[in-house]
Length: 285
Length: 158
Image (cartoon, rainbow over all chains, first blue to last red; front, side):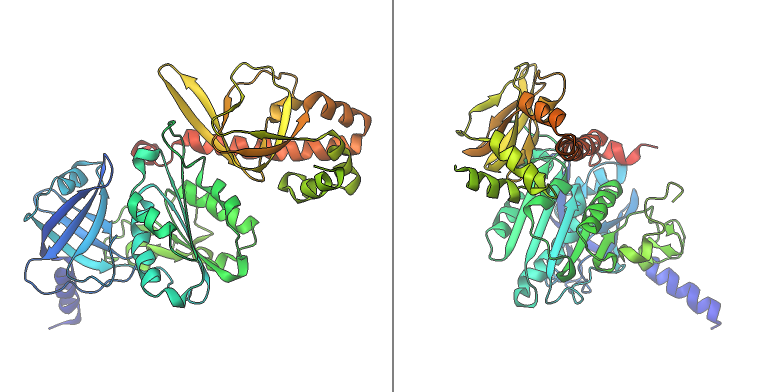
């Protein structure tokens, strides 16, 4: 077989989804749901590393890149936290237990959990950006002795938009773990912080040269977080971002998610900030 | 609180980072310690309050009344400032501020602060520069809140 034909067949194989079954759909908020998928053939899923994503195919509807939001050590059940904002996400969150969903992956780069060993880990998340960071939190908590302090700062639009609230409360009670949430606006029943996520930095004793920061959220939020961290003396090489673009194939084949010299799906979605800083925040990209 | 304690407390407050010792002493002479109980209103919308506060402990919430509900738009705590409008021409408060837990602060009369600024321009410059930093931070936060960056609609704009 010619090299071109081999490559073509490999691509075709990578583009063919396996079939998984919906085991559970858990409502996180009024518009955000966590789907639990189980293999349809009884074999465990391929392992994933925190930060990676899968391509989920709603048959007859469309395919989407969705970050894996569950425990990386559980290969019999993969969790995906999805916000219902369009036709395909609506179809996905409307799935019922037993429904078939196509799955490809896991794909993409991962959070630098080896690099962060022995250091403080600062996690800054906005909105549904907490979902791709949750596997990293699970990992750190399972390997607690390998890390110093764990700090989680989380911002959302309002109290009813906060995801994983019970888990966040539980994590906040663990030793050497600081968990703070804030909302852009709240009612009288909300007892937590109100204001932008960068406002939470004043409650954190940051050790700039002994910390790795993992950031995921709307790009404008990440920009302000970077400015805040740089102002506090954090080296850009210790900042990691999860970027999002229009991913279609998930394997660097179609080029839809090109970002400067990178494809987000293949080279990302997690990047060290210093690698993307010249592209970050550019209007044309 | 003794004058010495006041000076030490002020020296550690982030608002006064970089202030000259004599400027801190000047402020200490104008400061009075105040406490607010949980749920107590520090001021209400429309009040003619002229006090500027440096928060020492506790948390307060800035709120606005809309028909049928009260919206909380910011919380402030230890190391932050409240009432920067006390050094502006209008002292009429545009928000209400409620203490969410027992809160301790140092209070400064805005008119006295302004008078001290006029008497000593170096002090005035340092104080206004610190005030401007607070106002700029609040403006930036407000802009970010206005962007509503977490909403799906915000992601689609453009």
